[in-house]
Image 1 (spheres, rainbow, N blue to C red):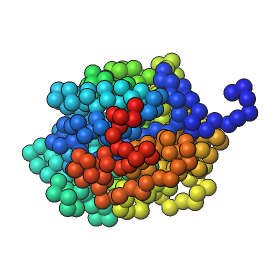
Image 2 (cartoon, protein in one colour):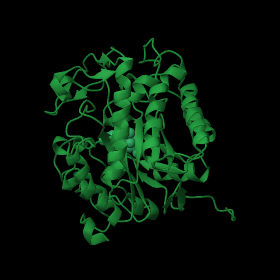
Image 3 (tube, helix red, strand yellow):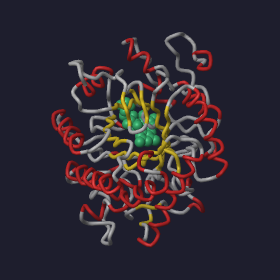
Image 4 (cartoon, rainbow, N blue to C red):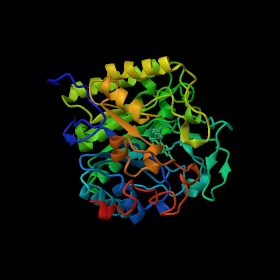
Length: 391
Ligand SMILES: Cc1cc2nc3c(=O)[nH]c(=O)nc-3n(C[C@H](O)[C@H](O)[C@H](O)COP(=O)(O)O)c2cc1C
């Protein structure tokens, strides 16, 4: 920049081919309002409420196949009906001037026979279940124990990779501007990455290069289908959500970054961004998550990955207005994604800009199915929650 003013959350940013007018991103968040896996009009309203001209939104984790779910009423992007239904959501967001990426999700072992075709055990890298420290939300809103998963045979992996590829194509067909691969928070891809889970002895387990193999195969398949400039990756090397521990999170994070950098060099193109969850994040409103580490260690991990990655870096996890401003001003992040604050403040961008008071979120309605309550009824500063009239 020609002047001495550091960037702020409200400075424009060129994210690959997309011109953003600010750096406040809607983090991907599961909200369980897509009844029977179909995005309903409530989703269009929810995302439109959080759209701003030149803003950037990432959808909730969106299922790549019938074996992918581990929460009730999560949307998919593998059937024609789902693709068609997403189109209205994307159109509503585009009409408000935002860019929107679809987050592609498979939960792996973080599922239950109740969510699986034929009540089968969920699939994973391993046959080790998630410990009883964690509970799974069941369709009747009660909590259950995670069951024993079935480890995927190596011969089955190409088919799963293909589900990601086909879902990415479907997302573009639905009008999305791109996709984010969910490689974080203890779900299927993370179950391959982390040595605290992955106990395989084949080409997908053991050394770090083998543990990165599944992610890289997914990434390459998706990039060859829709182009690197429409693809992003999310990782959380230092988050132990759902027992996703690694003995050396920094080394793992750097290994992923190095492989993405190499791929970018081979292609002569960059991904849209790399999204990393900061360990200080207290996950999902119930259980303390994140590796115990000092703030300094956490900042160091994020900074090291940021400096190593050749491209746009998005940080997430426990950001307030002040922390977001600092991260951008110090160059620790190009973009900051906000989760829980964006649930309860549909006009978060405006509120942060004005330094206006924020509405508190209600955890009890994070994963309920009511299309309005705790979903689209959080107030706007202007005193209305009618997004259409606020254009
Ligand atoms: C209700 C809820 C659902 C979430 N669902 C997802 C998800 O589907 N995919 C994902 O990558 N992260 C998910 N997250 C994590 C958020 O993207 C974000 O990283 C996290 O909330 C930390 O940011 P915050 O402190 O600003 O809330 C979820 C978080 C919450 C609170």
